[in-house]
Length: 287
Image (cartoon, rainbow, N blue to C red; front, side):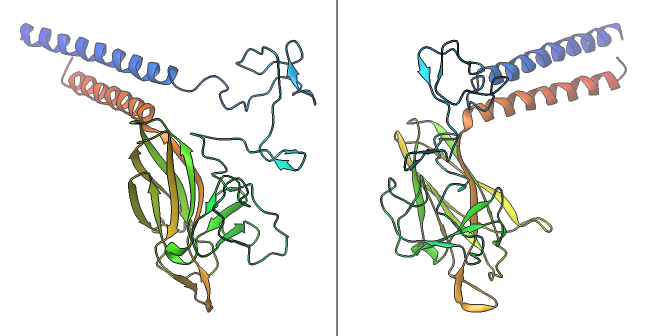
């Protein structure tokens, strides 16, 4: 009996060591991740001056300044240009908040025609590379998954939006986005074909309960320093109250994320949970 108790104590000790190691693994994965204020969203007390930020003038939290820099906001105008601030893994305007001017009474949204030049596209960061237009919609007249703007995909694969994003060759990524119904009486089924590099997958809109949107993702391994991501509607949908009006699913909140860090965190957390379960089980046996 004494030997059995001693074995149990050794097992508990081993599990505790594993638990501590798993916490250390998980914490190190987090510490090796994002830079402090890497998105420059944190601002110093009192804000930034109206001119460039230089040494001694103001500090950017988490960063040292050598010379003069200027902190800009996405959508800020500089002369006749609208400044675009890259987000995530350089997905530009993934939330579609930047786009053509939309009048308050524009109940039909704005149709964006084919444009193969991303430098002059009316939808910053994106090109419409197909034969038909897509619709730029707002939350005042349509159901938008997040924020104020989104893209409604029309005309099946004749209405494609795409963007070239920066990637590292041989690194694993996940293209994540939100899709949903625009709230314009579009007839089912609604589905999106999503492309990321050499991977393609279609997603049928199947929300839970009364949800008007759902998340989706495509995993891929980058082959080059730039990877094409693209979206189009699988079907040619029309509205139930007007069969001559094209409609389709909306896409929004598009990101390209590296999966190695997420996998490390998930693995560390899983190991910690499993170790705790073992400890609890052994303790329940009478230790």
